[in-house]
Image (cartoon, rainbow, N blue to C red; front, side):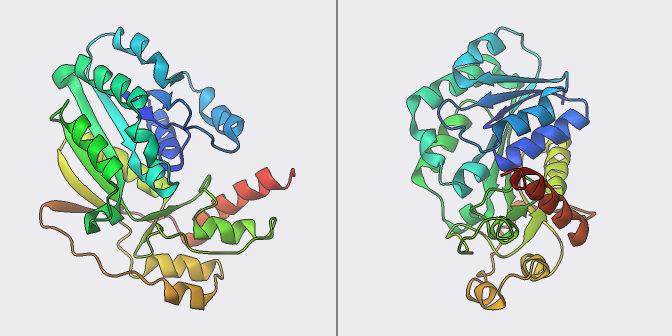
Length: 277
């Protein structure tokens, strides 16, 4: 894997996937979906990746120059997970978003590899029609497709809609701590572990469907307890177990970063960003 185009580059999982790829020496083009990138602390994120010579950033409307660069194999990465968790999936029904993406993929013909990062909830039928339609249109352009499903994910740059980030932010911002309707509580992954495993899964070249897991029992609750989140709130939102289809491969992240270390990374970033305010 030499070249990757990541759509929605400054969203949570997309951004960490980008950093992992750059650390592995992969050339990454980050695409801002025009009108969808309202990420807070955008300039701080740009500084994290902008110094790397293998990184370039473009808007969706600038995809044409990429098509002229040649026909070497390229991986297109779409984190539907980020859009779903932020209720931003409606951008995927805009023709001005879809058309340049489809044209770019078609130009690479059979040299394109597509990776969808998806919320595990979609395996339970909780799939928005907008997302389903978008995926089917992209599938019509390429046969080389990997679908990677994620449970809850936490770590630096986690959006404030997530419970863990709310709990950490409560030290600086007074707000109610609630669990969003779309937040999965059956398992959780540290975002750096998730990104590393996503990239390893892509590199296998095996097409199909994959679920990433921590391999630890009740791990979402364990991490929530570490953050001293109200136990009654946790109890009310226990998940309904997921029945995994035999055609989906379950992939463990392997070495799980210790809770103290991973939570500290998230806390340290929040402190750095919000102590300025």
